[in-house]
Length: 453
Ligand code: SAH
Image 1 (tube, rainbow, N blue to C red):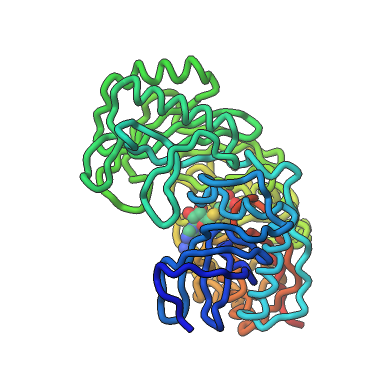
Image 2: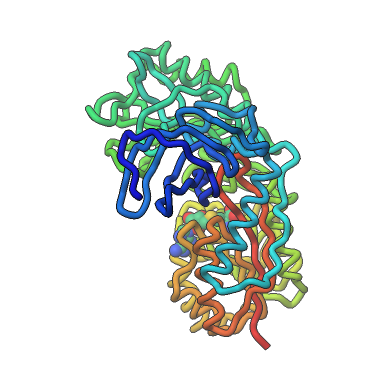
């Protein structure tokens, strides 16, 4: 039976999707429902019906789950900032582990792999070292906040829960200064206004701050005074950049940067090394747990002095540089040129000489290394959500490394790639999930893949 749009139903939630939506079934027809947990009974309004599934919205809870975290409500759930925050933290960790186990079965046909308990945070809030905040006009006033899920409607927010609280304070200060100096917020529909986004990065250990103001046009009226006021209040701001981005694309940043104050980078430390981080470079947003994740990766890699290691998708070099002193040689590859420039500076900064870097796509550079006779014993990969290209997997396996250590932020592509490695004579041994993104549905893991004997 397919329900009708605008129909009110009493439903029991039986499952949770990987995105954290509650699942209810009417006969066998699935309905997905936000902010509803397994075991809960709800009165729900049907919002959308498709051929195979539909969406409904909770009008009233008839029974709550004992796994519900009452502390998180409303805005944060609606924006997706903390889209799993309604589940207790302990259950969030179970949910993430089960997701990996299910996908290993479904995509890699593996049922007997050891998936360790998810390593969680002691204080699973305030962890993000970076915020990318849209600036819009709401009810006639410039506001900072976050988009309501599946929309570009801004919900004004001051406490983002999962961000470093100092970052929240800086965002509020920027908002107040934009208002004071009469700057106009960007309007996506009319394509008018100046200020699109404010991005704040704060070093977890260094406390150094970078602010990037994304605008539609170059000129910001009285920007010098604005920055002076900002920096007086937050003297740890080392860098203020403008990014000029006139069009409506989904990428927040363009290539067009303009230094407004201080330097073009901040520094921070990770596993004892110092890093130079520039605005376009990727840097793990949860420093504390990135350290835990990398240590797990190194435990699985079980490195020795003779190892030749490839650090693929290396960003600013954090993984390879952390282990360079334990191995013979590290080769890094990364597609963003600025990140490789940072990686080279970072090698120097830490007095590391046995690393070399190339800019390019890992799937293009890997075969280059193969044809040049580079013989890695360990390959560490840390790709974005889309996972590894098939060509990368083939040429990686061609050089027959003993171990591949795969760090993934997407278990769906990870498990797909595990199956591809299996076709090339490699098998997954074990997986450790590490919670880099508490209160959200995002999952991070590291897996060890070895050559079949
Ligand atoms: N290992 C780093 C970065 C991981 S994020 C760290 O932990 O900090 C993934 C990185 O892969 C990003 O820096 C992104 O720019 C880069 N990237 C994306 N697609 C790529 C490709 N096809 N080849 C190489 N690098 C790529």
